[in-house]
Length: 79
Image (cartoon, rainbow, N blue to C red):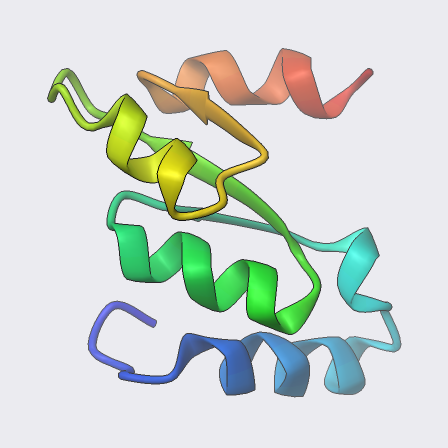
């Protein structure tokens, strides 16, 4: 999805294809527009910083949570 301009439409399409509701889906992204599109689609927006100082940017764009590395994500999703 990294090259798709409107990821909200793709998230909605994926939900329809799998029978999931948007609030049952988490979208992980590292840019502000990823967070905005996930929120627009109704999905959980999870920002990932990958050791960059972008936490505040991701949160301001609507991230429900922010992690630094993917290995931090699995324990969060199990709760």
